[in-house]
Image (cartoon, each protein chain N blue to C red):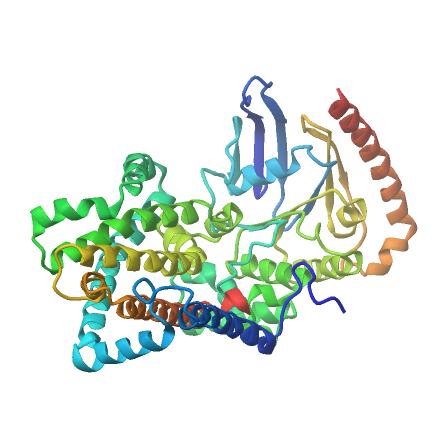
Length: 260
Length: 265
């Protein structure tokens, strides 16, 4: 039996083993380069220092509170964006005039880099929480809107026609066909954009912030504490991984018909 | 003039030109009267406008000229009085078999107890007991179309429209589905308009076969099928059936040839 064959599925055991082994390989190469003396510790800390620094951060510098603050900012800004973008996207996907009205602007706004708004937002909203939330909001809202609009507009026409012949009105088609048909894809969009929101929050915390993971990272740079920086980055990665798993588990629970 | 259940009054359909092409005349002015409780099959080669005609009756497409009357009232859009079964599988994939069948009943705000009873009745009549809680993708094509028929019938429509509903099924399953639909019709005596390009299918179920010409479509022949109901599948080997098949084959063949030549030009 061939080991590699196009599109051939893989069993759960080997999948887990392969997934973990790349992490192991990655850390091994890192350890070899740093502990072996090939890279100066000024530029890249070794894994052991990283763990040590992380432990000190957590136990002595209250880094857990920074993690909490950053998570709250991401979730807060992201929820605000989703609450506006998902209904707007559905309306745009369902109704062509709504789409015609918003689409050109939203497409334009999508290309505005959220990070470029930070100086302006600091002028408007100061350096408090509002500014951080707004950065994430601006970075997420246009993306979600356009992706949701595209999904809803692409709903299978024959399902919509079937609903009409069963007596559904226009509102019923939106509520009972367009929304449930696209709910899994919308959830998937949210999962994707949440990942991007993490980038925006860190950049926002680099500038004018006194708390959060990004703040810790930029402070550590001044101290050349690369172990702390890497620890911060890894924490973000782990939170991302955890939220991804959570999202996928919730989706499986909510949309059994996709997998049934 | 419109004594029947459904009256298609000089309905035609021209699809506007795309780019520099010619407008496509899909359907020449067509008049058809359907009596209550009739089972009519519309038989024609691919692309003859028979589906267009059905979609106009369903209200999913608008005629370029003419009108459709159901019980004397003009059709202006799709509605629950005309149940439709499509060729493609159009069950809502996020709803179970039972929920799919209940879709139109919910739209009517039927009381839950009555709804459950109605759903159970139609689940049974299409032979899907035990599959109520399955999702569409867990079902075979034949089972999906049975659910689609149940979903349309549960709404108690005035007329049932079917657009090549068994076209994607294998031969054996198709035969069984024809018997199932015919059995339901013999019990409930719904008015049925059934579009197909399969000659045997057209004869086996119909009380009248309407033959359409190649594009632009128009009615070429209207042939009553005087085989007695209830019909058993063995009727397909009877002499009367063979005669009808030979006659319709001749009618359709000429049209298929015309369609091929039309396509070649």
